[in-house]
Length: 248
Image (cartoon, rainbow, N blue to C red; front, side, top):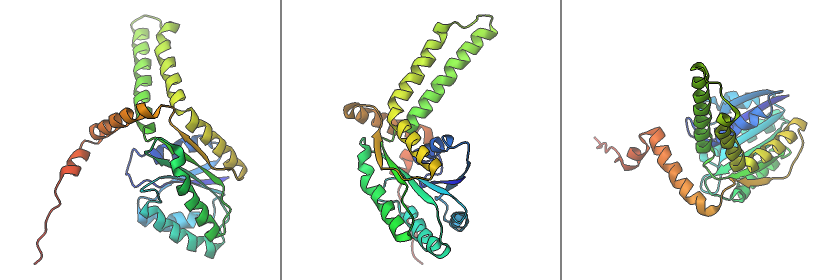
């Protein structure tokens, strides 16, 4: 089966949509999965031509101002014309994510893609709405934690101390915590991937990070701080003045 996964985030790297698309792709490793990004408009013709040969299309896209991002909307307009002219026959699925804690906030967003399917005469496959933008931060933190635990135990082994079961308990604990935070997302992605493998239709599902709304606010604040630290220049771009170019 030929499957295309589109990253609808305008970010060059480290996007939650890209992360969710990769997780989805890991559930479809026994199929031919190809990844594309909608960030670069010059690649749209190549992506459109590929639509003629795909069996399933999965769009991982963020929710912007309660709607479809402008560059994704432009692509959908071109895709609608192309699919009608070439009679494309694939099953479309959407993974919508947003910064709000409630995944149901993506409901209208998913409905927009259902409307696109009706206009394009393509049968809507289904989608999931994911609430909480801390998934990527959690993946970074726990990936580092996993690596630290493994390195510590490896150093102990090199120095002649054989690691015992108790040495692995912190790593097991971190894995359990990560799975707890993301259990709803993992479940919905697995259910959606099952529908993709069958090219079937499924109902829209909504999930969120498993954390209380009260704690989420503070975690979101930490996320913004980490974003600044990892990207470095973000805060300066917010404070930077536009360059004034006088007219000649």
